[in-house]
Each structure stands twice: as structure tokens, then as C-alpha cells.
Length: 263
Image 1 (cartoon, helix red, strand yellow):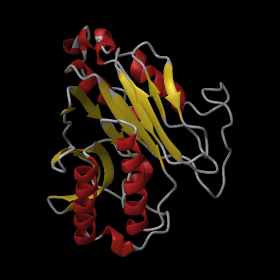
Image 2 (cartoon, rainbow, N blue to C red):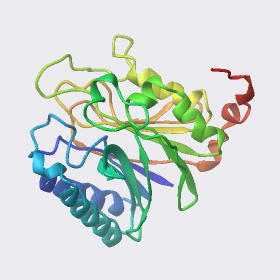
Image 3 (cartoon, helix red, strand yellow):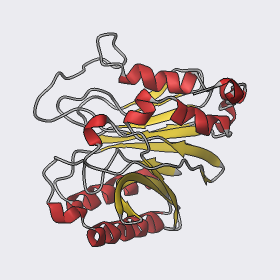
Image 4 (cartoon, one colour):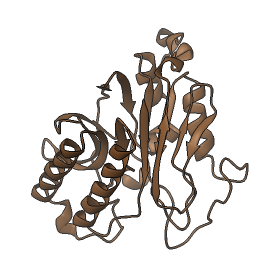
């Protein structure tokens, strides 16, 4: 099965994001991918990136979701689409799973917010599992996948092949740009990605924006912890990577003993 990781630029508006989305989805479908994943809060864009506040209104977001569904249906490809969304009237950071027929299979909320995000979104409270063409997967969003490995273990313990990890870190304004993938002097992010795969025995697909001062790459790690492919820092583009689902045994997750945990 081919998995596509999209590393787009920051969208300047909701409409620009939809234009970028269609380009990447069309490319992924043309290269035989079964599913494509975008970075965290791709629509309308992560807060503070300069898009109009009107792009975050419920009506605008619902219209954008419907357009994304149409793109998936036309290209006959599934997608993990992280975007802002309203659940029971509350704005949440979530990721929709859209089927190749354009239907919304469901969504995963970001349940563990970074402390800096407490004023931006309401955290979710539940975790979900999804399946596309035999690929069983979960989703953990940015901070919770880096700082809360339990969010990945939860899905791995329940038999998934892969966990998608849409995230955002980096900037076009300031910072220190990484130059070598997985270098020891890099921030810990890429090491955490590797560990989420290795400590569970599953695939881990982490997806970031392309930016000038990028702190982690979009990358896909195999169940044994080696990287199957990554996108170069600061370079917009799409990585399509072939995986063998049989390799995702989940051996370490399946041996986990939750009864030993006492909080």
C-alpha cells in the first residue's frame, strides 16, 4: 500500500489552502497512493499564520470540508485532513478522515493540547480508530504524539498498522533551521517519531509543513524504527512511500499490560 505525506507551505487563506490541497491530492492519486495526510490545522491554517479570522467561522469551515470531500471523490483517494472544526459548538483542533468516495468516516480530536494552545481550542476527550482499504490506523496530533506516547500506544494496543501524526513546528520568520535528518543536535522531535514506531512495532507517519526554519521533517518510520523516507527541510512536496502492512505486527504494543498502570 502506498502512503502519501504532504509537506505544503503555510496557506495564507482558506481558499489558498484548498487550492494547495487539490494539487497535492491529485498528485498523490496519480502516483497510486491509497491515502494522503496533511499537517496539523492545515485548513484554514495554524493560528497566527495570517489568514483572515472569517476563515475560522463555522460556515466557512463546513464549506471547505465539503470541497475537500469533493476533491477526494474526484480523485478516488482517501485523506487525513487536519483542520479546525466545531464539535457541539466548541472549536477544536481535529483531523477528518475522508474516504475515497468523499464520505467522512469520522474525526480525531487533539486531546492533549500544548500549554500555549489552551486559549485556541477546546481539547477533545476520545480516541478513534479508522480503516481504509485494509489499513487500520489511528491519529495523534502534534504535541500529544511527541509528549504523550500513550496516545499512540492506545491505537497500537488495539491492532492498528499505522498511526498518522499531523504536526506543526518551525517558522518562516525566525529560528534555527535543521540541515541533517535525525542529527543529534536537532530537536528531539524526529527521535520521538522513531520511538513511537519502534516501541510499538507499527508504522508511524509524521507530517509537517515546509518552512524556512523547520524543526522536524515529514517522515515515515517502519515498525523496526528505521526511516522509510522523509522530505527535505524547507522543501514543499509530496512523499509517496510503499509499505507492507504485514510488517506491522504490533508485537510490543500487544504485550502491554494496562493493569499495571495506576495513576
